[in-house]
Image (cartoon, rainbow, N blue to C red; front, side, top):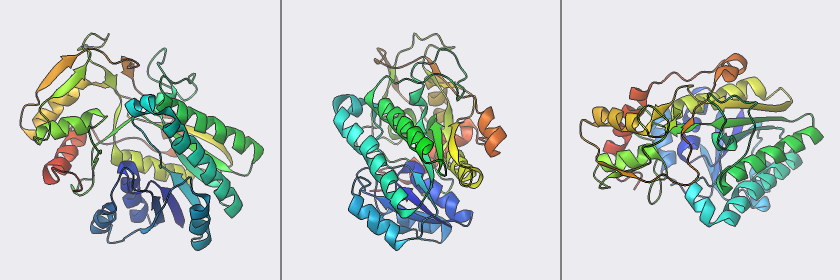
Length: 336
């Protein structure tokens, strides 16, 4: 079965391609390489022995997508392609709405023309805004505190409306919490361009000597150590969640929503100390003022996904940090 993977050379997309290949699927990867590198395909081939079919192009380019669907008999689409830096989204909101919202609408239009009616969308826990309580269930109210989160929420609403008008479609919205970790081989991992926006790649770059110290934004939250608490999930567990959704939902019409998280929260300082143990070196850090829009706690209630997808995260915190360190120490400059 051929699965179109948009953004398939990115962090989560590349790990999902490995899991797809190992489960007997045939991924067809499209990516414009704005935040990734083509050599990721070499690494996927090293791990699996299979080099995914790759077509370089942009999901906003309908002519390109027509060529993709004409050339390949696609059964389902897993849609990762999108911009994801919260800070940049505040500075450049139109860029995010164009890429994330318009791009998805173009993709779905071309899927419709091609008769492909199964879509798994890479959404985000940011659609819950600042939740009134934790753990977060799928039926919690949604809102957004920044243009990145709003772009994800807009896409969700567009897809719900589209599915209501096209009842034979299966659309699955996967709301991720905080993806971390790397492939156990050390060949694939997170390689952000410029300054990392997420905690663990920044910590890893400090550990490997690329950055002087970590900035910890706020230590006065109402949490056990005062630093923000998040639900960190191993990227391979996350990839497995996509395969579970593909297996269970592709033939079930409707809009399906699942949280993909561990159900456990870890603070920033807990992550730092776990990484110090894995890397066997200190991670210098500096306490800084809170950032606008940050919240104290955010972690999932993953029981719905376990009940309906038969999926749950299995990799623990130590595995997450050990795999991240293996990737970063073997690839100190990422995919360069």
